[in-house]
Length: 195
Image (cartoon, rainbow, N blue to C red; front, side):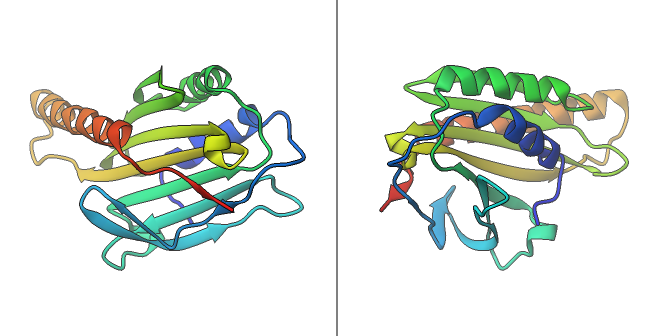
């Protein structure tokens, strides 16, 4: 199961995102592998849509990592039959990020019909690493008649220098890496496949 600070973000989003439904939505073809960032990610965890949940969650790891011990992770959050447009989704995402404590360093933009999110969580007692997240949303026909959020996360160990200056230098490097990950995801050709 997906571990990390983005669990709260995804849980909060589920309350905000998925408003209305369509009777004729297509079905998402869940990939068994995803090629991203010069790695092959394999489906490692599934929480499919069911009677009690309109949302499905798919998590992918690389190099045989267990989901609980990931160093980089792809998460697909899918809501079939949803008519959430990019502006509504970006507003819900901003609200969710603001409600996350401690609030991550983040940004949300809408480009070419996709909501692009960047967030960086700093180390704390419960999670002593930096967690860098980027996501790209797909809406309507591009998301098999629903809403799909493709999220890529990377963990980075805290630097050895834990002085204020050392932490600032580490945070700067993680933020620069996060910006690069966001640009890579923005420009990625990956998109959902539907049946």
